[in-house]
Length: 137
Image 1 (cartoon, helix red, strand yellow):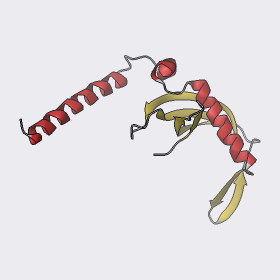
Image 2: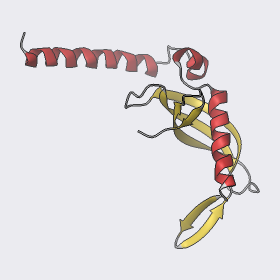
Image 3: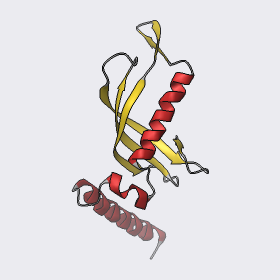
Image 4: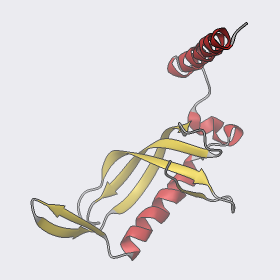
């Protein structure tokens, strides 16, 4: 078998495996991401909650979040009330212990307005000390 045929066969096998794993995720036949977190190595809901609270506390410690809207600068002071993990997937780059996680975050922009839920996606990686930290590819 020449190299071209080997590559075609390898690509066909990879596509087939990828297709089957995608079907399993879509049809919901697996265990939920929250329940399977510890077994698969992905962050648990509590770990992501702690990560988000630390992240927003760091923003506040730096004086808030500077925004410019329509030429006017303002500082907002977001406050997090609750965090729920929707699901996580391994990072596309294949970095060990790196995940992209979709969250539902209940927060307000000033700490005085009514809290609202919003979707948020975070990229996290387990540090050498075992903590979940922000990660970029």
